[in-house]
Image (cartoon, rainbow over all chains, first blue to last red; front, side, top):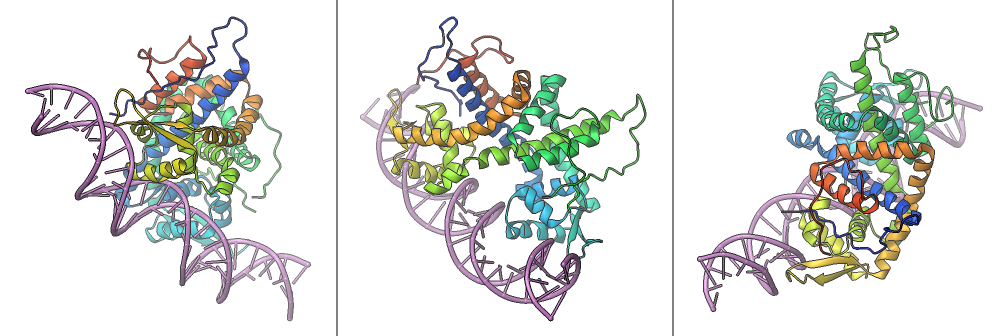
Length: 192
Length: 192
DNA sequence: CTGGGTAAGTCAACAAACCTGTCGTATGCT
DNA sequence: AGCATACGACAGGTTTGTTGACTTACCCAG
């Protein structure tokens, strides 16, 4: 079943020699990107679902787990700003993760109102299991596409994001490639 | 506050000239891709939310609208296979779109059990409005990244998807670039 | 033409993951 | 002391997804 057949019947035969309607091509290009973002995100996130289901957790939990693992010691507010959900939505997910021993909360040293988030050993182990599934997909993609393509991928993805997210990415990238940045130099520190 | 610095405290100073721990870099590379997929998807889909809210529609409606617009004349089953949701979830969205005059259903000619989906004029207009918002983001990304990067982006995104989605993409791509395919040749074509 | 399988719609009940709004507590800053 | 901030919690609501059982209409093969 399913077949997934495309009935691309919309006119505009671009058979003309020099003319080939550039506007049409550009638009098609972008609609294709829409498709791809949907499919890639669907299949990438879906890769971890099996494990998640086993544990009775959802994708929301995975997202929290991922970002806490990325920047241990982050505050609840930071996580809120990244996920763009409300405090209450996060609270539900977070308390579940804390209760099940995946996430630890420690009072901030400089500001004791904060509860700095980090993964416990169990949390790290779980995050790793989830990551491995997604890693497989990504490894396939990177291998098939080749090094230069991966660089292009990064540049486009970066461009789609909002400025704050770019800053996040640039900082993370600086960890692994201390030279050669695309965007403007970034300041010493960042507001949310 | 927030700092957002990754506490890569796990030993192995990659300062060594030739050694630079490739395994670590590869893993960081992939975690970075995880981040980017999240941010890019979040911001890309979010771009259309303003309009959606105005009309009391959600992202589920947008997704349906998009794919129906992409391949007019598709069956409900096709759409189900693409979205990967249940019949009932789709039914809710679809009946709303039909009732509000955005989507038309026509009985199939060869198989009259089917109800072929297409956008009405109003549906096309709405889809275009939604698309324009997302197009802006994409235009920025494409412009900043440059042509070769876009090609790389496509290759990686394609690799992340499941086979069925690749086929879909390959067919859509064949419309705008009849030559030079990466994947295997695809079947004859499909009547609308 | 009859019977079995298929495409789609529908009803009912439920769960996940969001949302708004409000309040309280501890803490920081001026 | 007074106001702002970081976080948690309660109450109630929406969207979007789920399962399962059932109906209607249709295709096709025997």
